[in-house]
Image (cartoon, rainbow, N blue to C red; front, side, top):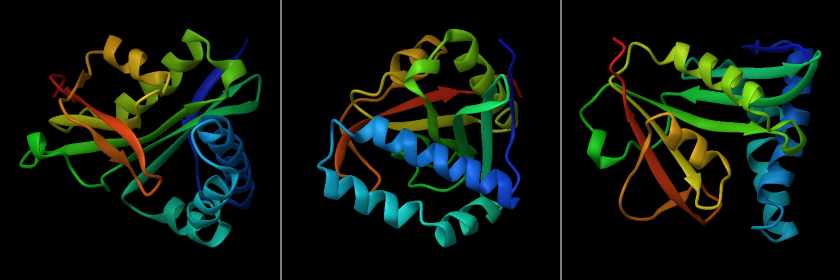
Length: 173
């Protein structure tokens, strides 16, 4: 199994690959939590091609894709966008806004590859934070990496699902 995580550039090919992967992952990730109409509205709002291309070209976002044997199986978005949790309001912070891998590829080596590429982007900030819905299977993985779940409940983006905020104080810089 050949695993590689690399930055996604806003070419037509990588945009199409990433967009298709994200739609598949959103369906897999939120299919049990949301009604079909709510899920379709979320995908249409955030993953229509025009909006998505502007997000790929935004200087605030870095997109990373993980491949297994040349097949895209997951992605992450590291961003400076998002409402920063109050506990880290005055710190240099970055947000891992998305971290998803197709269920059938959730192998520790694949997760590590994507995680390591994300962390390589974050070495110059004080804090890394994540906001994920409560039942997200990656929460335990991030906690094993030193992310600390914050007290209280949050809301995940515009979806309306209850979420947890996890914070990692970066000591590598």
